[in-house]
Image (cartoon, rainbow, N blue to C red; front, side, top):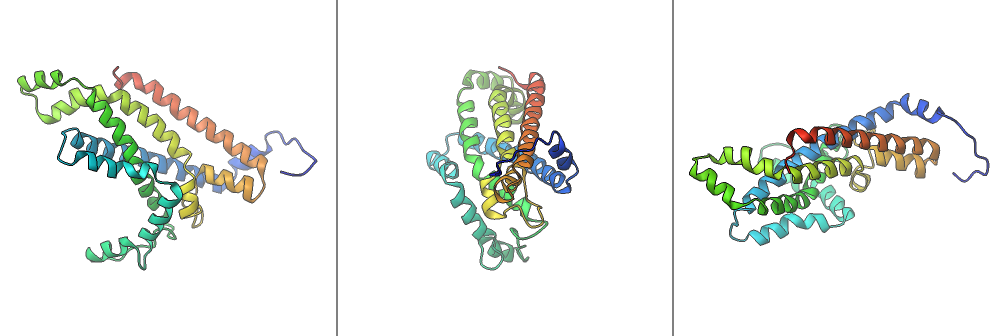
Length: 249
C-alpha cells in the first residue's frame, strides 16, 4: 500500500483469487447468509405487518419496540447478542436449559457461527422491513377487500390474490435492498466472530477488509471488491428481469 514502486500485475490477482479456497468459502458463506437473511426476514416482517395492520390494542408500542433495533448502533447490537449467545452465562443458555438441552458455543463454533450471525442480521433488520410493509398495506384501498368479502373470499385467498399482488412493489424494493445489504454485511460479523472460526462466518466485505487493512494486500482486495460489485449487479439484474412476472404497479 505504501511502497513507492507500483507494479502492474494484469490479471494475476484474479488468478490468485479464483484459486484461493478461502475465497470460495467466503463466497458460499456470503450467498448462504444473503439467502437465509433476506427471505426469512421478509417473511417475518410481512407477518408482523399484517398483524399490526389490524390496529391491535397497543399497536404503536409494538411498532416502536420492533423498529428499535433499526436505529440501534451495530456495535451495541453485536455486543449484546454476543452476550446472549455466550454458552456459560448467556440468555440462550437458560432457554436451552428450560428445553432440556445445552446451548452450543454459537460464536466460536464451526457449525453455529454463521447461523448466529444470520439470526442477528434478521433480528436487526425486521423493523425497517415491517414499517415499509405496513405503509404498503395502508395504501391498499379497503373497497377491494369489501368487494372480496361480498364474494365470499377466504382470508388466505385475500392474501394471495389481493394483498400480495398489491404489495409486490414494496416486496420487490425490499428484496433488492435486502440482498445488497446482506452481501455487504460487515460490522456485526466483524465484532461478533471476526470471520471465524476457520473462516466459517467470513463474508466478502470482511475478507476484503482483512486483505486491504490487516494484510495490506490492496491489489488483491481491489479484485475482491470488483467481484463483489459484479455479484451485486448480476443478482440485481436477475431480480429486475424476474420482476415483470410478479410485480404489479
